[in-house]
Length: 255
Image (cartoon, rainbow, N blue to C red; front, side):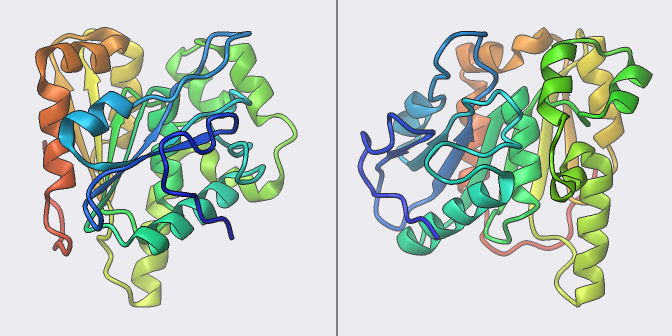
């Protein structure tokens, strides 16, 4: 199991980077969105971590596969990414763990959280609700269709549960209930703008699911993260997630 070194430059050539903050303070894990074809993916969230004064673990996806093929320096699948995050949490003992991502990173943050009991909250901005052809064809979503097809082609059977988030969240919720664990562990907050019909359709598939709250904004399109950042609201939303109580009861399912 990989333990990530606690220095901001470590892993820059790979898929992860650590942003140092107060020892034992909250940890924000940020999963970057898709990089333009032919460009090196960026680490997102460094400025946010510094503004909020928290520890950061920044992950990027060189394979442009919604992180399903892993992160350089950790492994070649989502389970390997989860193992690396788990090791980092064990080594640093943060007071709270929040996963955040925008677009493809938002999708991956939800999927990754399903593997981590350590996560308190997920903030997912404008994520898809599924990567299968069936889901996206039904919603009329042909965005990045070739890239999405390449991302899911040839994946091992172990990756299939991560291809549809409603099914994943429902199944993991049921498994926790069956195992006698607290049914509500990780709060999932989905943010989208109503002026993007496709994002709204994906959010509708996630609304009302166990552990999930959907927040709708009147405008922002697929650039909602940028709009909220400019308005200062992104810091408020993520800051609230990072300072919430460590132990929670059942969630309200309304925003």
